[in-house]
Length: 219
Image (cartoon, rainbow, N blue to C red; front, side):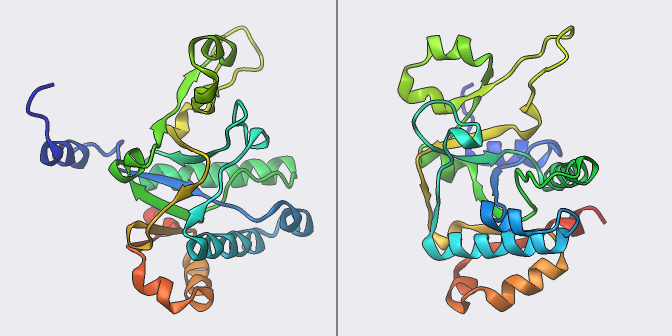
C-alpha cells in the first residue's frame, strides 16, 4: 500500500475498537508460589503476580519461556497478546473462571503485566506468531524460527481442537530487555494498584510510562 505512514496507521487503529497499537505480556506467580497458594485465593494469586511484575521492572527484562510454556524448538521466547484492554480483561477473567471450575492450580497468566508499543517490540525482534499445524510449519521454517509457531488444529470432527488465535499472539526470541519509560504497567484491580505502589521502588514509579487497572475497563 502506497503512502501509508505512521499518522495514517494511528488513525486506522483509533477507528477500530477490535485493534490496538500495543502488545501485552501478562505474568503470574512462580511455580513454587502457585503450589503454596489456595486454589480459591484469587487475591494472593494476583498479589504474587504483582511481586513478579516488580521484579521484571527492576531487572528491565522479561525472561523467555521454554518448551514448558508451549514454545516449539530450543529457543526460548517472550509472549505478548495483541488485544485491546477490554479483550485482555476478558481473557484474564476466562482463565480465572476455568481454574475455579476445574479446581486446578494451573495458571497461564494473571491480570498483571506490561504493555509496549508494537513498533517498539517489532524493532526489538518481536513478531506475530504463525498459527498452523506445528508439523507442517516445522517443515517450512528453519529450526531457528520454530519459536514463532503456535500449534493450531481446527478440525470439526476432532474432539481435541487446538485454537489460541484469540490471543493474537506476538513473540520475541530469547529474553526481552526494555526501557522503563516505554513500559506501561497493567494491574488487575485497585487492591493490586495499591499494593504495587507500596512495594515498587520509587525510582521505577517515576520512570514507567503509565498504569491501567483492568477491572476499571469493565465498568
